Image 1 (cartoon, rainbow, N blue to C red):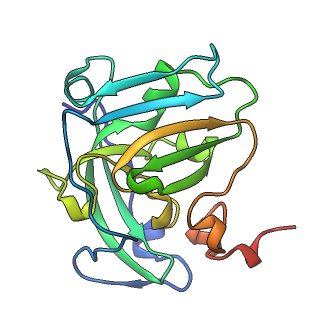
Image 2: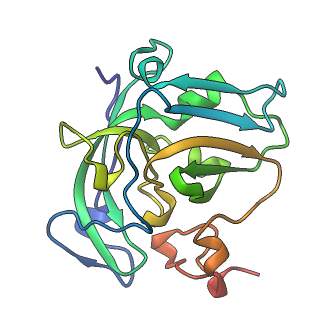
Image 3: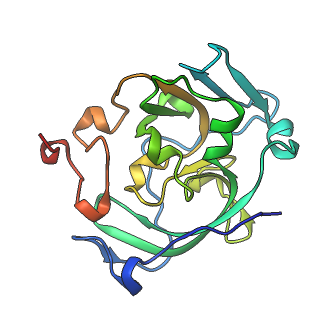
Length: 206
């Protein structure tokens, strides 16, 4: 079961980030088709600028049963850069910080690239990936994730806009310098902090 329950929901007693409006339910939003899950071909890789220059991979059975991978529950809102926020999501899965402990990054690492099916990618600062509320989710609201919402594994970074929370996660690459992911290459902000309204790249700080 989970060993702690971080919370990142409704800052300041229900306040939403600037420009956001609350919506009911959980809207489905993604680019491209929903992939087919093939458990015999699935793995999760961690590679790139690791401390020992090696890599690590977990098969689907290993990821689900490894005692080295703790499980947590995170209750958080989900903010879409399009301007809608759905609240009170309950995510269950592996804290991203656990991967950093099992596969330590090199001292030079500043960012990670989250890779998903079909080559989708999202870049994150290392501190955002390591945050206590960042989770590799397998369940939502006590149920296994649906395919449309990222089954079998979804990266959830609730303190950033939703385009950072890559569905159908397959790999985490450690980077020693920033590299733009799918939406960042298309004009979205490389950080994506909703509380600073960092939706688009033209709003980057100098």
